[in-house]
Image 1 (spheres, rainbow over the protein chains, first blue to last red):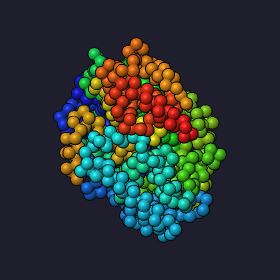
Image 2 (cartoon, protein in one colour):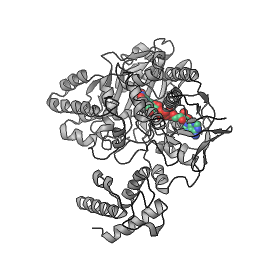
Image 3 (cartoon, rainbow over the protein chains, first blue to last red):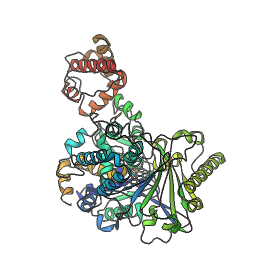
Image 4 (cartoon, rainbow over the protein chains, first blue to last red):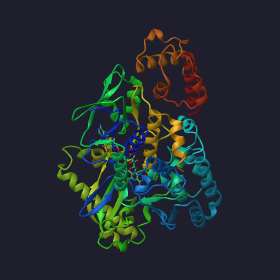
Length: 498
Length: 88
Ligand SMILES: Cc1cc2nc3c(=O)[nH]c(=O)nc-3n(C[C@H](O)[C@H](O)[C@H](O)COP(=O)(O)OP(=O)(O)OC[C@H]3O[C@@H](n4cnc5c(N)ncnc54)[C@H](O)[C@@H]3O)c2cc1C
């Protein structure tokens, strides 16, 4: 088989890159190790209830916003039914220590009003914080598309800016407010003391500008891309793991998969950057690159209970509100291993589906998790792990359900667990080392991988290269396609779709 | 305080090992790009390797960008290491 471009991975970054390159007239093949395409966006079904894994909501889909423009340009936008969160939609943040409940609305204005009402002594700090996020967003081309992309990408991970934690402590006294303003970190996985304001703003700004669900969830996004890709003549070969990248005369020549060889002059790898090292023959990269990629620090993992409830109406406004119980202060990502269920989050993305017969009964209970919790169970293959692992999973899930009942009322304790995701599950299903939810940690303490590599024709993409989240990963696919074609001209065409 | 000589020896060793360069090429007046054959993609890997070896952060972006020769690199690494050690 032959293609011009082979894309390894069918997550949102691979789908985006493939669609853009096909639009530019390239012959593209996508290779996916799993049986079904879509990466973290896929839905799975238990007892007739569809569950989302890696997509609950996203910003960037309003008129004039960038994800919408990109998806318009690609041609998938008209295939999607986008559901804007209503004005009362919010992150319902309960602070464990004080019992305070703060509704973090998905709107700069409503958020500011609510925060100033709950924290009247911090009015000035609240305004300064929100203005600063807006100002920073205005220097990021994804939020101010009149800017060129290249200078921004060049400076993206420069260490000069201060951390979110430093910024917040310089402005605000109240530790509950520190937690509230830090809470977007759960959407990208970097603790407040380690993240610079640019990375934080690139998630917080779209969050404060309005968020959106998609009718049919992440699966609807995958299906829309598949339809567009089919029209463009892109082949997607699933159940094919790429085992190595073929190199001839110090240039990419194709890939070898579990099924055979495919010739190509460009290969885009969208999996975790550390795993790339195993695919490339020895001696291609310098030792410094191997060491850097091997030592990348990743985000932590999650423990997720995919549960069902018979009478969804008893769960109140869970459709457009996500409930969190978090700590106070800036250490909101530090997991207490003795009581890992203490801080939890609960949401129900399926309830937003218009045809919600089955989906409306699905509920997700989520908490942070780390590899240490499951390392001792890492033996045997998926589906056939030890009884001890199954017992630990079931008990951990029960504790979370009890905790939800204590925090938000009895109805929540009637959630019945149907499936459980642990760091082991995410490692095996998403191919992320130690089940890292968002892959590489975009921390001030390290440089995230770039898109280019030393091997001509070999490119990186995916959430590890730019930013976590479907917006970050889709934009990463655009940046990689742009590097192969020509970045600024592609950017020009995309931003015209605003 | 880390001495000039220590910085020179350690940087040379890291560059030889991590970029598989011949030690005799690693003279102070050797330019990173032309003489040593590094490219812009190697720059980040180099910064990461040096930060790790010296336990410091190459935060002075202007100075790092202005580095042309190995001698420039000795100077920047030595200065930042000592500045940051003094702060701790
Ligand atoms: C629990 C959870 C909740 C999330 N919630 C949200 C949310 O609400 N909103 C949001 O915006 N983001 C959310 N995210 C993040 C978002 O899902 C990801 O950032 C994004 O989907 C990553 O896309 P990607 O293309 O980089 O990677 P992936 O989707 O992981 O795709 C990579 C693909 O490459 C394949 N692959 C890897 N190596 C090989 C190989 N050698 N051969 C063949 N195939 C290979 C993998 O099988 C995989 O399908 C969430 C993530 C998780 C895990």
